[in-house]
Length: 209
Length: 209
Image 1: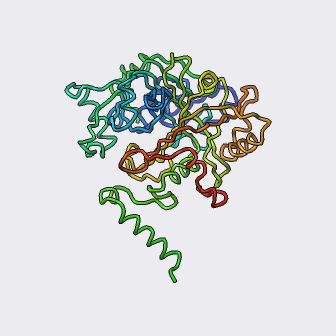
Image 2: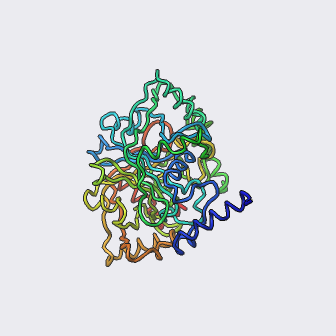
Image 3: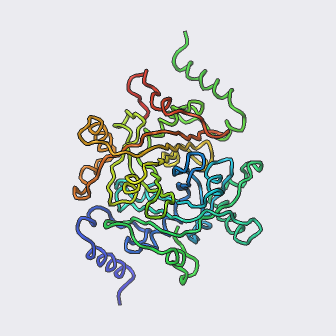
């Protein structure tokens, strides 16, 4: 009978044989990161592993120009991500003000800050990048979702719970409508929001971090 | 006579005395990073130190939604940044296609991936964040600016010069019209594009990396 190590080696070999030579030499497969062919898994891994990204809104103060802002987020407690990014924002900042006027928003993550791209350039398609586009909504503080979101945010960002009360931080979430993932040569991978959100549902809680 | 070390200590002490107690305890001043009160210097330091960021456009394919994309950039050869971000983009990617239809673009950088924020949260205002908003323009390959931009890009991103010719990469630059910088408590710092671009001009070439 084959051991798990044999099976892992055979799987890696099959993967290598499926890929063009250029791709294989450009980027080794990183342990822990899903295979590039597993697009939904890679997107969920990026969302689970990162702790910050860039939230882009339509700027009400800059005549409708796109405005990207650095924000922290969480899609679940460490080791248990659900894919929906939650944010802790104040209307003292333009991003929350913009979203309250026009909900259209995108949220962008890179694999590069995770350190798993090695010497590959951040723009190289094998250094994965994810853009979730949709609507940024306030989460009702009295809902059970707000409890989950608070726990997700405050475990990954402990200082948030001490941020000034008079700044009136609120929990927002991105309702995902479109997913743009580059994780290999050959252009963006088509993933539907339901494929992304339901990924791993049959495997109990998803361990991607 | 006072030695340079004495002067540096006195300057640091003066800086500390000017800041509220909460700010001082929250974040030490990082060596190499300009003081938070030096807003234009901090913005230029972020642009010189980072190698990638998020470029946000108005998406033509997503009905005008804002679309943030991870890109590499350079504002000069290492150690000599000029503040203007140059990019190497292909219309195989939506960002360049968007910009050719609507030039309005923002480019967002964080101090967090530089490692100088320590344990401070990426959204904490003392972990600096910069958004440059303006127009994304193609740089004419026959211009002397193109030579400067190529040298800036290819020294910081050596693999770019080997990227596939049939992808028709072009050099773009952001013509900056608005600057949003958070580098401390108290809201965004007002910096004009000319203050940002002319920073350090009287000191010869600017050494910010």
